[in-house]
Image (cartoon, rainbow, N blue to C red; front, side):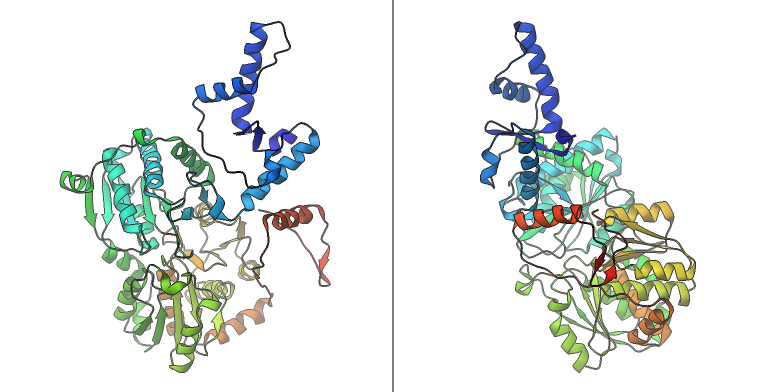
Length: 520
C-alpha cells in the first residue's frame, strides 16, 4: 500500500518513478540469482544500467529539499518520502526542472526562457505529430494559432514546421487570435488537433500551449500524460521539421483566417435584432489581449456604441496579469461609473474568460454571472437543460437548476472535465467561477467573446438591470456567500494544510454545519 502512494524513490543519486522501478528490480534480482547462489543481491549500478538499457526517459533532477538526499530504509522513511514529493509539487514553478513538459488543467504553461523554450515546443509538437501518425490521421491536419505574448508567433511557426516535417497539413491562422476561435476552427475542420500558443490570464513572463481534440474539447488526463511522457523522452535527433518558407511553398502550411466564420457562428446564437433596438453603450477592457477585434465586430453590427481601453499590443500587458479580476479592473469600473455606460466588459489575455461591471460600477462576481446567464437562458429564452460546474463554483447553480426541475453536475477543476460532462449529459450551460462558460450548441470550450455578446443580449432583451435580475434570482432560491483569499505560504505550509484537512473532521465552520469536504 505504501509503495503505491510514492511516485518517486531516491536510489543513491538517482530518482526513479516507482512504476518504472519495480519491473527493473525484478529483472535485476532474477539475473543476480541466476548468476550465483546468493539471495539475489545486486548493486545500485546494476539497477541504473538496466534502466538505461530499457530506454527509460532520463531527465535532470534538482534537489529542492535537503531531505531529498536521504535514503528510504524504513516505513517511516516512506511516509517522509511522500511528504517530500508533495513539497516538490507545491514548489514555485520557477524551480521546476526546465526540460520537463507537464500539462496542467488547461494545457502546458512554463516561464519563458526556462521551461517555455523553442526546443520544448518542438519536442511537444513532435510527440503530437507522432500520435497523429499512429492514428493514421495525417490527412485531417492540425489548426494552429497564437496570441500576443512574447514568442507566441515564433512558437506557432516552429510548431507548423514540425507538423509539416511529419507530412501533416497545417491550417495556420493569420495574426494574433482568440483561443475560442481556434477551438471553433478545430471542430469546424475536424482537425486531428488544434493548437494555440497562449498562457491565458497568467503574468507576462509565462507562455504555453493549449491543445484541443477534434471536437474542440481539451484532451483528458490520460491522453495528455501519454503525450507529455513521449515528449520528455524525445531527443533533438528525433525531431523532424521543414523550414517555414519551404513548408508554405509546398502547401503543407496554408495561412487562413477563420475570423468571419467564427463571428458568423457567434452571431447565429445571439439576438442581434434585440440588441439593435436597445441603444446600449458599452466599454470594453481588452487587457491588451486578443479578443477586442472579434467582439467589436459583433457589437458594432448590433449597433452598440463600444469604447475600448487597453487595446494596443503590449506583451507586458501594461505590467499586470491579463486576468479580469476585480482588483485589476479599477479603471474600467471608474469609466463605467462616470461615463454613463450601460455595461462594462473585460476579457483575459486569450479571450476565453470574462468579467462584467454593471451600470453603477459594481463588479459582478463570476458566480453571479453564471446565475444570470442560466436564469436568462432558461426563463427568458425558454431553453431547457441542466448545468455543469466545477467544484469551486457556486452551489447556487445547483439550487437554480433544481428550482427549474433540471439536473446539475459537479466535476473537478479544469474545463476538460466540464466539456466531458457537457458531452455526456447535453447540459444547457457549463461554467466555472474563474469566468469561463459556454452553452449547448456552441463550442466545447470557454468563450469570452460569446459570453460578452450574450450578456449584452440579456440586458437588451430584458430591459432590466443586473441588480434587478439578481434580486429576482435570490428571491427564488436564497443566497450563499463565498469568498476567495490568496495567502502567502511555503510548500511546507501547504503540505501541512492538506494533511490536516484530510485528517480533521470538520463538523462546522463559524457555527455553520459542514455538509461535505471535497479534495478533487
